[in-house]
Image (cartoon, rainbow, N blue to C red; front, top):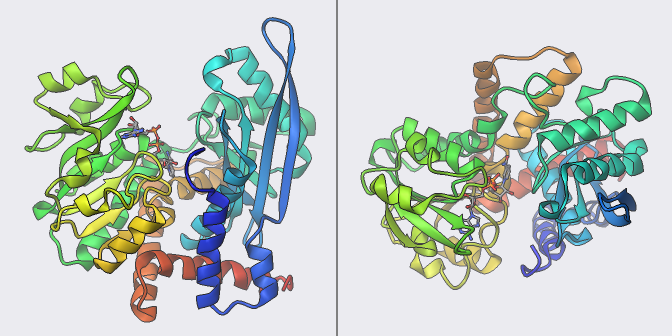
Length: 427
Ligand code: NAD
C-alpha cells in the first residue's frame, strides 16, 4: 500500500492506454480519468481514556453513470487519498466488466483498528457515517467491508444512517451479517468466482481440470474458497502460501498429494495464517514464502496481496504454467505483466477474476431492497451465470482485437462506462 508505486498514477496510466485504443474523445477521457466527487472529512472520536482523537476519513465516487456507486471502506494506518481514488476507479471497471448496474466508489479512514477498542471502533464507524450520510444511500452510493472492516462495522454504520434518516434502508450497505440483511454465499463468492473463470479458461485452453496442477498464494477468504472449488472440479492444488505473524514472514505449505481444504482450514486462524507445527503433522512440507511461484504446475493463483509477481521473480515461473488467475487485487507489477504478455501467458485479470465478491454484494443489495432473500444455491447459480458470461465476453474481445485478456477486459469496461456517460448526455 505505502511502498508500492502510486496506485492512482498506475490506474490513470492503464486508463490512458485503453482510452487511446478506444479513440475516446478528450471530454470523455477527462471525465473518466479522475473521480467525479471526492469527500475528505475529520471524524472526532472520544477515546476510552477521555481524550478526543481526530481521524481523517475519505469517500471517493469515481463514476456513477451506470448506477449507484459501490465500494468498500478500508481502515488502515497507511491509507491515502490516492489509494482510495485508484480503488474507486478500479471498482467502476470491475462492476462494468461483470455488467452489474453499479458505479465505482471507495472509502477509508486513516487508523489502525488493532489499537482501537470495540467502543472506539463503533464511534469511528458512526462518525464516518455522520460526515457522509447526505452523500451515500441505497440509490446513491453503497459501501461495504474491506481491509480491516467487518460485518459488525457495517451494522453500526447502517444503524447510524437509519438513525439520521429515520427509516429502514438495508440496501444502504452490504457485507451485513446473515439474518440482518446479509446474503447467503457471500463468503464463498470471491473464491468461487475466481474458479468459475478458471473453469472456463481451462476449457478455452483445452486443458482438463483432472490433469491440472495449481499453486495458490494466500489462504484467506479468497484463496480458501478458490482451493475448495478447484478441488471440487478436479484440479489438484499442491501448495498454498500464507503470512506467519509470529515470524513476520511468509511460508509455502506444500503437499504433493494435494491440499485438503477442510483439514487445512482447521489449523488456520481467522487472518488466514497457518499453524506451521500442525501443518507438518498433516504432512505438509514447509518451503520459503515465495516457493509457490516456482512450482512445476499448470496454474498459478495469486490470492494474497498486491505486487507479488514482479520483474524480479517473474523469471522463476515454470515453463509449464499456462494460466494465471489473479484472485488478489493488483498482484502483478506492470513490468512482470509485460514479460508474461511476451510469453503468451493466459491471464485472468484481477478485476474480472475477483469480481464475484462485488457481484454477490450487488445480489445482497437487491435482496435487501426487496426484503426477500434467496437460497444459497440460487445465489451461487446466479453468480456462476454472471462470471461465465463476463469471462466469455472478455475472451471474445481479446480474440477480436488481438489483445491480451487484461486489455480486453479494460476495453469492455471503459467502453460500457463511456457509453453510459454519452447516453446520459454528459459528454
Ligand atoms: P485475507 O486477509 O482473508 O487473506 C489474505 C491471505 O494472504 C492470508 O492467508 C495471509 O496469510 C496471506 N498473505 C498476506 N501476506 C502474504 C505474503 N506476503 N505472502 C504470502 N501470503 C500472504 O484477504 P482476502 O479477503 O482473501 O483478500 C485477498 C486479496 O483478494 C486481496 O488483494 C483483496 O483485496 C482481494 N479481494 C478480496 C475480495 C473479498 O471478497 N475478500 C474481493 C475482491 C478482491
